[in-house]
Length: 165
Image 1 (cartoon, rainbow, N blue to C red):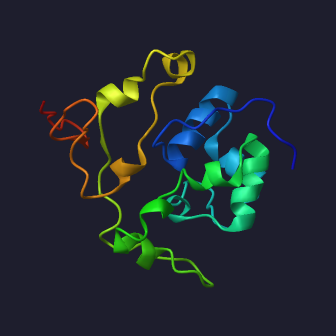
Image 2: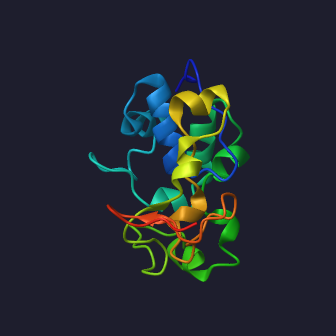
């Protein structure tokens, strides 16, 4: 596996899914092609990115993706929810190592995506002006309902949802 010709620095608090989408957009490659290039073919089906990639990556998975994207394995692991496994039990319960596919705890992910439109619009950095802002790791969790950075009490969730400020 050869490193990509270009890569992106992960944004603070960015999720792995967001990073894959932004990097794919920058390189004009589908995110699934990036996943296959990293060697994660046993974790990925033909049509979608599994939520299990947000939970944690094995050492070889993190190292392979780090080589591909010119990062460290620690930077790649920081894109997952692993840092909160001690504070939010559904992460730990859903990322127990072992054979076979894992089914995430029902209290782990929200049913419809939540986001802050201001965060997704990006800041004034050149990369975010072109590719938009990152999807935050926290937005994947059901107990997150506000954006403290932009003082929003409720994040958008699904089509037509109201955003309060």
